[in-house]
Image (cartoon, rainbow, N blue to C red; front, side, top):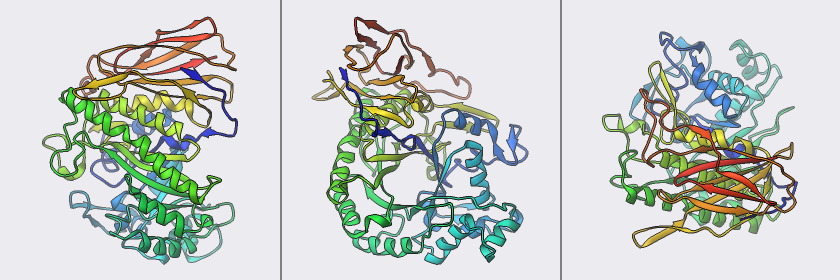
Length: 491
């Protein structure tokens, strides 16, 4: 492996490590926003042990209120005195009653506690241009308009200055089943009325493609003027079986066949991102428009006995290996991928945190975000290597994936993922132009790829110091254990 000197202008955006919190299952209610009677540290009804865990991994942006839920959400129902807010049915996720007690102010309080960028999704599917424009004025203006006077009355005198706005969500599907041509016309109309306010320049974000749908990206890039969009999204989930109909595969208790197929399906992210980036390059040679993979992660069958509409799944070392792999892919495409959101933060899909009444645990995926935060806003370092194969049956995938960066203090970080469940990898790395004296590291691994943390045993899969790297002449020599994620620091 050779780690090359980088271009100081090419930065791995911290926003690649964003999270997603939808009104879905127990993500908001029971996860972030809890009953007043629950005996955990709280600020109001905000669950502070969850907040502190997210603070520790420096979540750079948080996307809300959806997802499919966003295109049924009317923001005005979620402001003002809680007791006076109208209830609504959450028709997308379990037909549950949504009491709107967690609304715009509550979400932005969570963002303030996290020191994170709020990323709002405007309702294009069932809302109106005026509704979106009113929300923007409510949050961003400081003139004495009815919207602003209402915000002040609701307890926030100063503007919130929210600049990240998704204009619709999955407009090809649950956001309205639109064609690409139709959506781009709708988008331009909405974007026209998405105004900047003093001190707040909007980042208007296009609802982009599903998986490898090249036509959607092509149509958006062709039809929407570059000055009307800051970003374009992409949604790509990894299903162990690869099938949306029937079983997606079990979250736990799987064999090597499902382990292999999950990783094989997950590695497709690299080609999918490259395909969309190439289309974007055709229309935007200067790479002004960011690609935001604002929904990604492993999607399995729900845990037995839980509400199928709540998408609650356990999280194993397999998921952590895929998370590290995916973040490496995004890092290596950082010229175009400048944001991403893991689905989802708490209790839903590939969550970083699970809660059960007073108990809380950090999943293996959480620990990967903890390891990888060293790459946030660091200078990208390209690398070259050829990986041995991990073969299963008649198929094979590369056993190793990696990415590297240099932080503002000059420390170099290399993240390495060994997907082979049985064999260690040894590598020797040349680092031309890197002046370093010592290497330290941390590792995430466990006895089995199907190991996971439970509320009774929350530390089965946890981080440990890594001793398998040393200086060998001018080179770095590493022995990477099987099924492991390792992040090294050279300084």
